[in-house]
Length: 418
Image 1: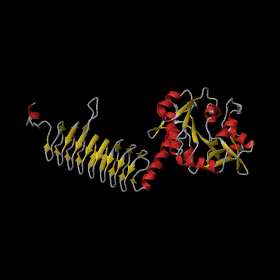
Image 2: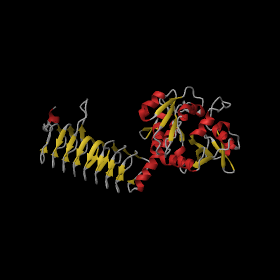
Image 3: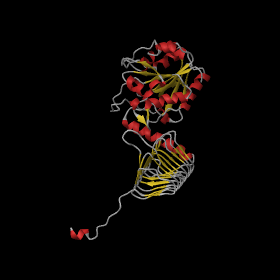
Image 4: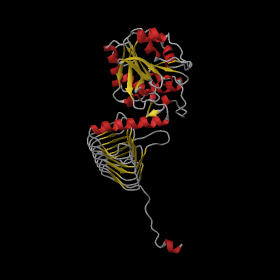
């Protein structure tokens, strides 16, 4: 897509979220809502993205930093007023502009590309993303005559008959820039003292311009975020989409509702994920692995084939080679574990000294007994056996047995004589 820029409207103030953070700063699977919208634009091929901010400028800039440029809207007088702030910027550009609300985090790059491609192919002054929703309360409605879009009416201004319309405005538009700049400056305030971007549709229709629409196939893409309840709902939708993708690729997920796999995770065929497992972004898991239940696999982990990470195990920045097992009740952080090792119940890497994180290295074919503390930095060679209950503070050579615990003392008949 050439000569396409993006505008994201992010200046609105809304207290329905009941949070110290705005709705655009809420995190959905570890990523802020506004960043999800911007990322989808960029993945669609729109490199030049501008975000229109208001009183929340510091918050939004703290999230997006220098990934985008910023324009400020002083006074929230509606979506049309937001785009008015970009008039000078738009007049310096040619081609098309994709405008999107900042609170639709599930919008996909593919849908944005489809919108732009149709707008270009049909030479439309504006192409509107729409959806058919059985319960459309809260959305503006798309009004058609002879199947042609004639206007968009915001919900507050709908008549009773118009409320029955099920086609809704998704809040994503692709305008031909020169057509938008002709009408945006002539917008009038409505009865509530607001400028609506959607009023430009009727103006363009009146001037005989070609108006088009793209009906989104998956309505979840256009769901907006305004409340904590909606945040949970969107999280659930995204979770099911991600889990379904992995299952379609050959991963067994025993309970789709309690398995949280973040985006950008690779999992090999025939790996089994048991319930109540969380796998964070960037993790790579091989084939025929066994994960969970109640496992927490954090960023930076790479698991080879036939690895077991069992119940109540947390791993972080752990590189685990073929066939090794961490079966239960362990924390393994900042570590490398060789092939065919067994990590006993309750074993942990003591990786943090209060200032810095240190690495633990375990060779091949090692057996680590239960309740062992591996105080990093420490290296264990191949074929090492560490006795249960040991606290290991020094390197252990290959083939060695390491014991680091107090000798047991039994005081016979002590209880009788006290």
